[in-house]
Image (cartoon, rainbow over all chains, first blue to last red; front, side, top):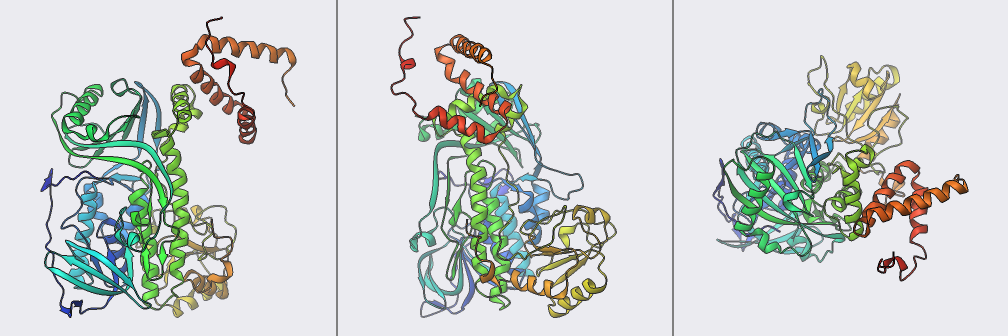
Length: 559
Length: 73
């Protein structure tokens, strides 16, 4: 729920305004038949379009607003999402503007009781998290779209300030009615990807219910412009003297923008809390308490947040696919919202492109739904624990939170209960796309994402950079049968990307002895690994990873 | 089967009762909750802790006599 606020600029960020337009029409119909229409030009919709563009698949995005989003909204981008941004050609902007961080501290009353540090190895290319306002995230993706179009004109078309207001599904395509200030028209597409957010029009129009848990707790989100020199870390204050019985979070974003979130107590009036004088009084009280009350500041954006973990039962309904908040909602704590949306886009783009290119059966798209539903449930379970702690849903949770917080300083095991459990890459352990594999003592198992490491003496500097648009085989010093098998599958599929890894550190991290092979999907998830695979093993694993062999292992995947 | 000797059980019973009184009516829930968290760590056995939670909740007397006033102490 975002309060109505409109800006021309926030700090140095100036909102661009894009004009609505009408495409060439014949009898009120777009003369062009589209392969893919994406409803919603938020970060997930843009990521889907950019992902498809890597395969040369054209798409049209229909976006209701005439600009990027108002307010900072989703402001934490995970390492996994940054890997996806790299594939989409947007990483550099994210890294230049974003603020990387690894750790956080939690206080109870006035004492520090917990410190967390997200896993980070100095060898890793990307930080575990950066903070970046969603308007920058969207702008950088729009910029990436412009670069794509510079290279291949018209590959991604964004139709701004245009609203889909009806949808009709026929057997072979989907018709969308689009309205804007200049008129209305009908648009036909083979595939529709609904990325139209929590209030998804497409979802409602199709009558698809969301299921899950809503939580009672509410948080006020306040962004302020504050010239603080405090380092980029996440701070949380539980039951602080300046806001007894509540929780306050504080986070730095670029451009001296600081986000302060605070928990509304039972009976607190949300409307009142959002009044500028109320919000300002709270902020001043908080800044005074953390020793920054002398700094000048101003209110930039406010919003109210209520947690929920809800999902559609399936993310594929024939020719309509759902991604991001249109498919599922996740509580804010642990930042799984937008980050899981980027994972949706990354999972969907290659599969949809393969299906459109005729390289895979449409059933491959069912694996998108299956895998991302599993990810939702894993994410929801973690987010539920965070939410129950950050926003206790009942007296029992309130009581035990106080018990845990008050013991945390002296009892480090109990202090772990305070951990907000930041998002981490999800593994699709039972994926129908994975093949039976050999035992390895280390390295990513089938369904898990690649562990990125530097490559010494290779052309690419990091392992993750070696991934292409097709499947990748990581091969470790193959000879004989394995070398012949790799050569044969590579000859049969020109998009197959064979990466010969000689780096000893990578080999150790992947427990790869001579002849070991990892099959990696375009989204970085491992689809199989073997010590000495033969041609038949590699062939059938590649077929299965394209969705050709799904019926055999379908059992046991349902959650 | 309990590893506690009868005398030890008696002593612990009295000890936790005295400590609960010392915590006082307004903080007894918090005191008992802290005790539970500390004992979980000591027991270190999830299923044993779950059994204890279930046993404590089963046949919980209604109304609880201890919910009354403490004027008579």
